[in-house]
Image 1: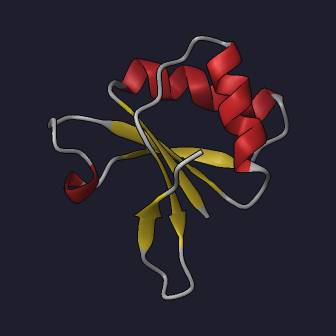
Image 2: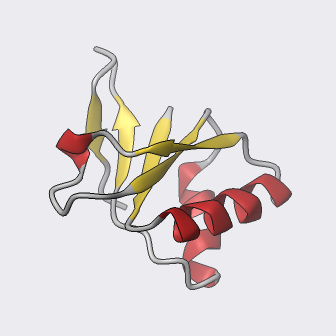
Length: 82
């Protein structure tokens, strides 16, 4: 599982639409407070799939992302550097 964070619900909604059209399984959620130091934020949770391909698609569409997280073997989320 991956989590991609955005600074606004509008960017997250646009990203969700774009990724779903491209065949990704994702859903919009409020970003947990520990992931966002700047307050309000929204994120997309991706169920599997190729996160690099998703990030490339979002970057090509000029949708500004903040960070990408991956769930590790212990079930915790850690930032993924792409």
